[in-house]
Length: 254
Image (cartoon, rainbow, N blue to C red; front, side, top):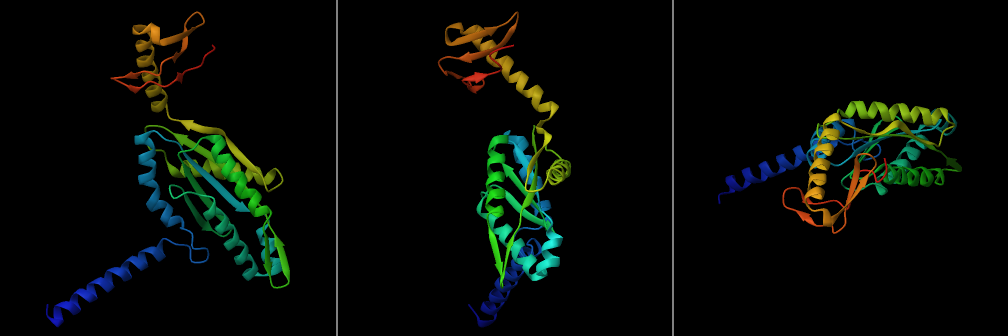
């Protein structure tokens, strides 16, 4: 290889590395090192589509540091930045690679959690809340104690949800937490919002399972209260058309 060709390849490699670095910087919050809002906008569409396609839930958690202006006014903006970094590290250490935590700006953060239920999400958020509340940030001779409020909203369905709509619900829940006295966690009241398409799909699945129960009565226990209200696959047998039949589907009582 000629010296000219080697130099050209080296220049191309350096240019690609520089472009990757610039792209990463554009998607990263400079202060905390967390992804920024632009990173969320890039990441979310594919994740939301995957949630709809593979039928798993997705949750938005809005977090806002309580009385943060008072921290800045009392201790200075450098101290406030240290508090933001501390909170960011707590978020990062309590979320998985499949999740996303980002700083939206100021003292406002967004966490997106996938493959979890309502109780699992609340457990994670409560752990974050407690850890931050118990963290003392030392800046010079000052010891700063801060808290954060959280709002949770979720979605599950076969049609990709609108992220802004979920975030707006989580944001409203977060403000309810602040009005409740700060350092609190509030669900938006809807919890996991299922799309109408998802409800219809579940109903169709249950009809298939009930048909299998009728055709193979020895393998199922039916639950009846003037009508069939549920069933249980006693043997957990496989079904060639639907895959492995769930152990329990539908309520056991009316």
